[in-house]
Image (cartoon, rainbow, N blue to C red; front, side, top):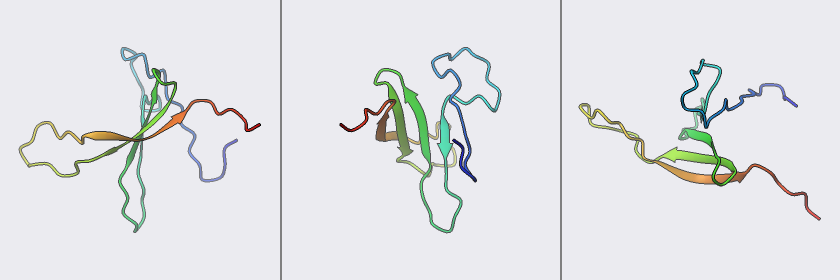
Length: 88
């Protein structure tokens, strides 16, 4: 159930890399914070090998002006299983 001030986003067939995507059909989500409190952004995508959501963050935030790659060197900071078994 969608709560007030909540954005509902579906990952749109992330395994299909040949699928032409519209802006509202993401394969991953980048979450940032707009506040006076600084916080790094998160990248959320689905790991089909482990069957759950992978959360990653960048470890590099500044590049040389002539750096053509600009690799943020994402590292996994959390893994969330797709299904949770209820406590017995």
